[in-house]
Length: 208
Image (tube, helix red, strand yellow):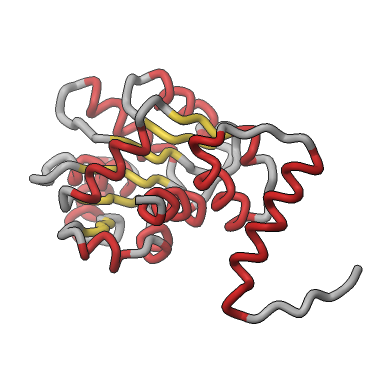
């Protein structure tokens, strides 16, 4: 295979060209409304399965964009997802990207009540005073907490990016989110991760 001479500034552009070429060559059809999101997930992971597995609630991207424009919060379940989101753009609109997983009060309550810190983090997020979009890339218990709190009327997220990765309860938690009525973006199956959750949020804001 020939080594391409690509300038550092052009690497991302060339990467997206290769992704588009590969999708065309393999005959994979994607929903063009969400092509920018799907392609950024592929770009982040080099995994073309995201062309087949992504679920989008009707109007979900517009809801996420609206929260960003209105200076709302993006709440993540990991510091990695928080770090991966382009915070300068969020903050330029007056919003913040928050993660409570390392907070002392969250750790203390989780230990005391035998809960995961991810679960308690979502309960803490329910107390926020602005519209919230959740970007979940690690813990299925976070998705379960969001769905339970929503059903109990204690939490009303504008949208959820549900992309936990792994084996225990991952697929079931994603199915629960999709069926909950909450507006969401979900890579169905076991794949996902903090990098994918961040990539989805970034894809939305780069398209605004």
